[in-house]
Image (cartoon, rainbow, N blue to C red; front, side, top):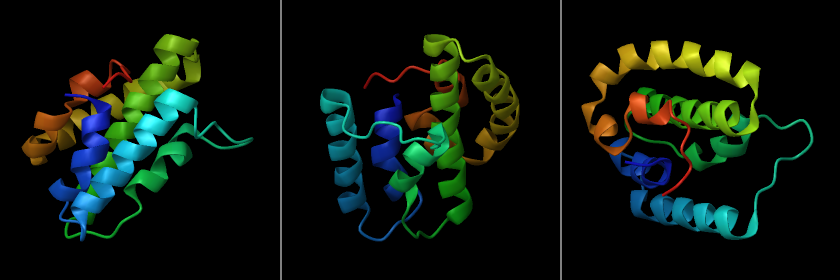
Length: 126
């Protein structure tokens, strides 16, 4: 279970058209970011905005897509809290964890890829 897997599996899980293509794009983006810092944070850009484009596809289940995006955002917030000592991110991560823990029951297939508990640790490894 990893955030990389969520990025790659979310299109399929949500019923996106061309899910395999979106998965490959997510993999390429991930690799480029990890290996080259290919998508550095732009001035004024939030963490959520940095990852939001990876969920910019229409799909059969928009609520699940939004849940996956929020789960990825939780992982990002928890990462910033743990690795960058961002207290605000930690507070937001705690609040989001509580909300997503309840919502997770609706999405067991997503939880198999990345659970709320795992996302709340903020690990960015693949």
